Length: 497
Ligand SMILES: Cc1ncc(COP(=O)(O)O)c(C=O)c1O
Image 1 (cartoon, helix red, strand yellow):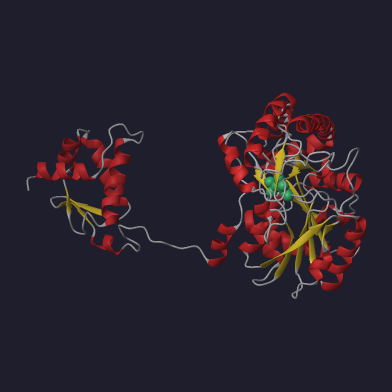
Image 2 (cartoon, protein in one colour):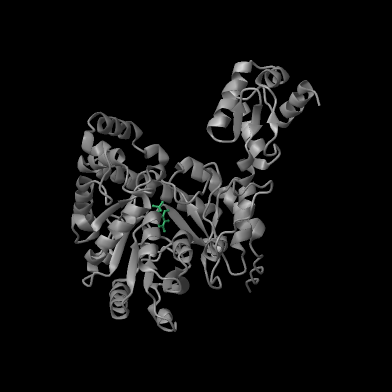
């Protein structure tokens, strides 16, 4: 083979792309490296001269020289005066050199996650997306000023590594706030800033559970939390929810006792049931006598009751067995990525270690901005504005539903939350309706997949918070015509005599 022909062949095998944004030496280097790794350039084989390859590719020889030098520096090739450049013999011994990617299957626990229903929404914000607050209320100008100030005033301390539990000043404000609004009694050393409630569940699962341990969850319940128990190999036992919250009598009939109980007492997800005081006391008594830890997910609590929310379960906890988890996605904006956990004192040391090994510490500058946002009263003002707006939007939804959805879906008449819970008549298929809603640009969340056991009821969760009353008034009749296409026909009314 002539040198020119050899170079032409090599040029073709390099997959050379003249329009690439990568520099010529980088493209050459990556192409040749891949040929060596995959074995297509066999050990000992000789590369064309830099001049010949440059000519074959129509590039300057200097670029080829740079690529060859980089390959030589990394030990793929060796250049000798007079002998040219050859692929080194050892290259074939690089482990994992294959043409086919290997399978690397995930472990059994990870595979079990595939069975957990996802709460993902349609990519664009469409009525009735769940879990999104009014994004136009997000205080971006102010937030930008606070972040800028945090950057400009950052000293060595805030630019260096931080406390695994987060900014002490922010934690002190949360202690005061949680005491004032949620009835919690805790100290700064019990509060850990997290990236989300989900991160808290994940670390708590790793901290508290052994494979095979039993976790009680509400049924229906919040799938992302369930995923964290499943991911550590726990056995998740669904406990039904009645009009007072987690049904402890149903729980008591289970043969194995729980190590952990996950609840959403302020507003049960997804049924919106508020756990009664009697049930809260019974739950604390049960968990104390069985040595179980309770995780209280206090999502949405800022929007739970008109004129203020019911105190947290953790506020009644005398035996230090409740971990309280809160976060900001529904009160501010999801992209903030900030939540917190309030831990019993007995867990703080081990949780701190785990937090440190999981991801070090929370981001300092965002915490500084959040500290000023809460400390200067902006958060309270923002919440007041948001509550008024959500009351208006909820009213718009219910008023339109009264006209267009009567007899099709029955709403829980609550003055709380960022979403409405609507129950469908017996015999309906909420999954099918939610699926068909996508084609109509309606983002509906079916309730039946949120049951781990056999679904008792079918229904829909309708987020209203990010939509104006005008948008809701347009979307509700569309939902009405969708529902009337799918709901079982009711028998005609008996003629009146
Ligand atoms: C039941 C429940 N828990 C917790 C959260 C908080 O989520 P994150 O993990 O994003 O903080 C949400 C948010 O929608 C929720 O619906």
